[in-house]
Image 1 (cartoon, rainbow, N blue to C red):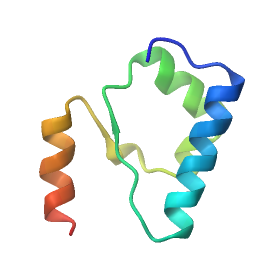
Image 2 (image 1 turned 180 degrees about the vertical axis):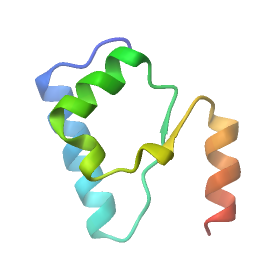
Image 3 (image 1 turned 120 degrees about the vertical axis):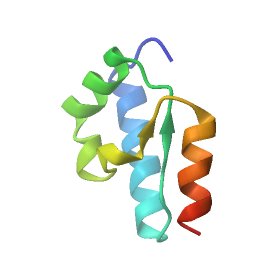
Length: 68
């Protein structure tokens, strides 16, 4: 995703809240700097730890399999 507007950031926040409310863990893969900044401004990282951002799907899956 190369661009994140207000509506996209709001959607990400709702998804993060749903995951958290249900006891799930949300992993974000391949987010570029622009997306990370937009999510930061929206308060996304109050719901999702920055440690749950990964450069590749392989990295995210390795951590997810350890957290089962």
